Image 1: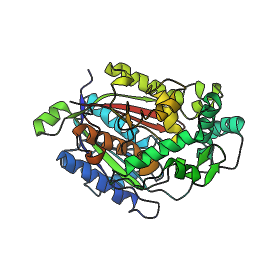
Image 2: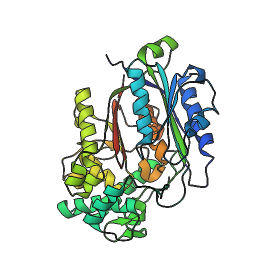
Image 3: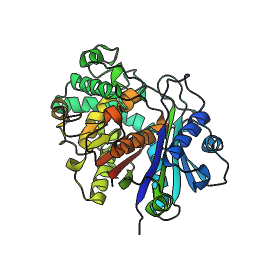
Length: 394
């Protein structure tokens, strides 16, 4: 029988622009130390660790955690593209839920280079070759970086079908900046208006401006998960429980539907969310706060629909009605999201976890969502993997 799993401690460092951060192992060890300090647990009490990063050599997780201590525990390195951090959390939760361990650390970090993401290994087939071929077939090669073609193409598909306006994506980006202005850990804390987003440099005419895309960023975040028995025995905070969690990968529709929204994981996200709602016995309307994967403003809009926050085709109305922010139905990305906080790939999922745990503890200060009880996290990686996690204030 699966055991309840609680998040006893979280920690993250302020994210930084590439070239402005410490090295990966310094960032990682600092974030791990913050999570342990938050929980009040020494490193030698940790029984396993799952460490996520995308750009780095093997055993970089050991390099980071050896700065914290060398206790001989299993350290498992995780790489699942942009969902790497939440994949580490997924594995850590499984270890505790199964009874394999009682106290497990999930850590994620990334030391990134400036500019668009690129392939490191050019002497072998790219895992994205099928995604690239489908994208070429659906949107052509318009000279913009591939990630922009993926998510811009998905946003354009929504625009083409439902008449969604470019200004709606600008509204999402402006909302992110308002939230980030209240977050001392966000990289970009300057508020920008819808008009400023629209006036930023054009990346894809009629589809995307620069401010609608998240920046490459360096950073680290961590979470310590424990069993209820362990938490009670050691007097740890067990006010936040992982109520449900699901991880999905691509199904046939990713390529068979010939729809850019499927190429970027719409059904992966919807399936993971539906599994979580079923596990927890709730509906989307029960949620109070959501951290979702807004690598582009376009993906935030699509994800509203995938998570069931609004009907399919209803995302523009959802935005225009203000249902995605304070005073609306759901506060989405109170942290400022990837658009304002930045996106260090391996750290993002655990940064989302950190935000939601603090929300449910009532410690989010100026960002606090009043009386938050249920919090949903959505973390997406193309190629592909999606992790959806539901947290509950106990």
